Every structure is written in structure tokens, then in C-alpha cells.
Amino acid sequence: MVDVDLREVAGGMGLRPGELVTTGADFLVLHAEDSAGDGWILRAPRREWALKRMAPERALLDLVADRVPIAVPRWRPDVEDIAVYRKLPGTIHDAPPERYFDDVARFLAALHAVPVEQAARTGIEVRGPGAIRETIARKIHRARAELGLSDALWHHWQRWLADDEPWPPRSLLVHADIKPANTLVCDGKLSGVIDWTDSLVGDPGADFRRLVSRFGRLDSLLSAYERHGGVTWPGMRRHIEERIRMAPVDSGLYGIDSRQDRYVKAALEKLARLSPSAG
Image (tube, rainbow, N blue to C red; front, top):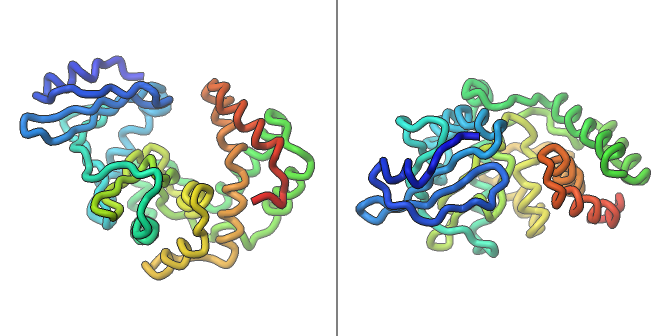
């Protein structure tokens, strides 16, 4: 964790400190304003793993800023260990407008088209197609041992792991945490995408799971994604559905690893109600 007083940093930059958000598990966030009244964001890591990801995230944002049709944070280069950037236009909408979903599909098609070799040079994690499946297999094994995964779910996911068709044939640059809390809307349109800490070269299906889990629309999102140039594969729909079904496993193991019992408790409750035929 970076030992820094964000209010002091903001003041030293001529910014007027505002709200300090301390509820995030991985980052402290300070909202500030400059003399013209424009908003700024200062973000400091609270955990060692988050600090390690900051340099790759900075480099990745520099790479994608001119390649995607939506604004992304551009960090000030003269500040190390914390992110300092102008606040992007728009606000978070828990119930986004209709156009938002087509805009997200267009954004994802552009993001997934960024050359993997260039993304890898930023230092972000690179997880090939085989490693994607291996990573998920390890999670399922851990869930059986540490979260009491039912035999029915275990066997269901073993069949998924053994079937080649649902798995992505290629790894792409992904944001990996697309949801309303990480997207901004202005004038009825998607205007910005924030929080790139989880980005990696990996499973393109990961960029659909949180939106689909909350809003449905899988078929329309995939159709729009293809229309904007995104490349799908025959088993992509089924793969995304299983990634969504696995959400309690992901959150439960995150809770174990980060020692946050509330995530583990919620995951156990959801897994107890989950069956292979559940949506």
C-alpha cells in the first residue's frame, strides 16, 4: 500500500480536495477540483497487488486512448504510484439508457481489436486460450475444496471444461470488469470507461458477463458486437453463460484470498441455491 495523503497531494498540485472515498477494497479515491472548477480524480492503491498493477495500467491506458471510441483516463505522467487524471465526462447510471448497450458493444469491438502484441508490451497479464481454461479449472477445483461446490455443479463444469466448442479460440485485450459502476453516461450515450486494473490479454467473454448477468441482452449485445466488427465463435454464447453461472465461485475465492468474509458468505449462499440448469 502507498503511504500517501491524497488531500496533501491534491493541495500540492493546486487542486481543491473534495470527497474522499474509502469504501473500495483496493483503492482510495479522492475527488478534487482545479481553479477552473474542472474535476480531477486521485486514486491510491490500498493493497500490494494493486500497486503492482498500476504501471501496466498506466501504459495500457496510453495505448488504448486513441484506439477506442470512448474516453478513458489519461494519468498525469509526473506523478508515480498514484493515478491522477482529469475526471471524464458523464456520470454512473445504474439503469443506463437504451443506446448504452450498443455503445458498449462498439467499444468492446474496438478494444478487442487492439493488437495483442502491443498490449502485452504494457506489462499486463497475458493468458493464452489454454491458460484461460486451466485458470477456470483451478478455480472449480478450489471451489469444491474451499466453498463446498455441489457434485452436480462439479460434474456440469467438468463437461464444460472438456468440450472445446465453448472456449475462446484466441485471447484478446479485455477490460474484464465492464459494468455500470465502471462506465459513464453523458447525454444518453456511453462517454467513458474507468477502472482498468483488472485488464489483461485473456478471455473476450469476460467483457460481457457482468452486463448480461444484470440486464440480460446477451443475443442483442453479441449481434451489436459483430455489427461493429467484433469476432465471435460458435460456442461464445454458452461460454458467457457459464462464466456468469460461475460468478459466486469468482467472488467467493476473491473473498478468501483477500480475507473479506462478506464475499465468502454471499458466495456460499448463492452456490447453495445454484444448479446446472439455473440461469
